[in-house]
Image 1 (cartoon, rainbow, N blue to C red):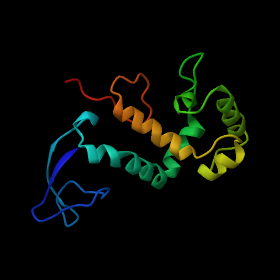
Image 2 (image 1 turned 90 degrees about the vertical axis):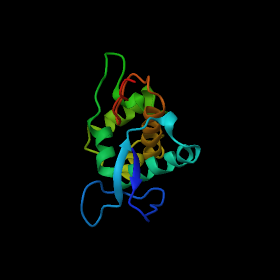
Image 3 (image 1 turned 30 degrees about the horizontal axis):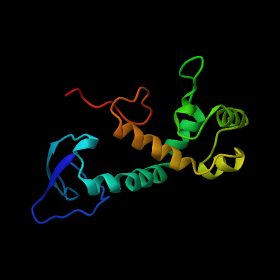
Length: 147
């Protein structure tokens, strides 16, 4: 979202903002929804770091993907949408989750050999979905509005 802060307020990059009235409100108004190509160069550089921060802060929400993801088609599983996960890792994840739900990223990495830094895989997938408006399967974002 492109937003205008209240007069005299300069939020730092990555600051969570509240939209509405109240003492926490630092936003005067929302200008418009923007797409990836509309971002400034510095915002494009900052985006991967902010996405990874969100993925780390919301571990329970994103680990649920590994616990609940199912097949998309008869030949493709939702886990394969994550960069770096092919059939071999997908089957390793599915076999391990039969033994019990993953409790977090550390538990997932410990139980599934060959899977390193799942939070980075999720962050990369989120970034890919934001950058490419023609992506077929969206897991973590909504499709952009038609222009």
